[in-house]
Length: 207
Image (cartoon, rainbow, N blue to C red):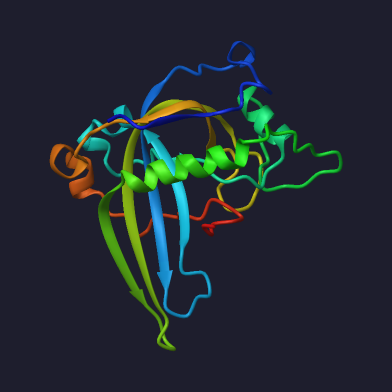
């Protein structure tokens, strides 16, 4: 059975008012799940996204094609609106006059999308790191293939991700795309995420 649901954002920003292409795309969402033996936050997760077609050329497997996707609230609605209008967005910054006029179910719908991603993810890689002082870190990389729409824009800030990097926010309906990445894609066979700079949110902790 296909699982799907709606991110109810159209109350604020009708699709016809967007200044960018918001067609449905086949996407892969990466989840970086971090476990640290000395951390008080055992369920740390970061999310990145890419179009599946960007991974088709094996010769470009070292190219950075993933960019942050914001699956938790914490940014202002005007920064989300700026992104959907194709303007610079500063989701980590706070400004006088910031608005938080999201629909009533906005937070719950983002949570449902995170659950959809978690329930259908495929394990891609496990990375283990050790430091002095008995500090250990385990990074598990998962991938979930979905079909959906994104607002995409340029990041204007200077923290967490590079200035001028692409960022995205989910909009509309999402549904699972059933692809076995571990057997059908050479990209995952050769890609090493041990050096991936996955920090992309000021609130990486699950509820």
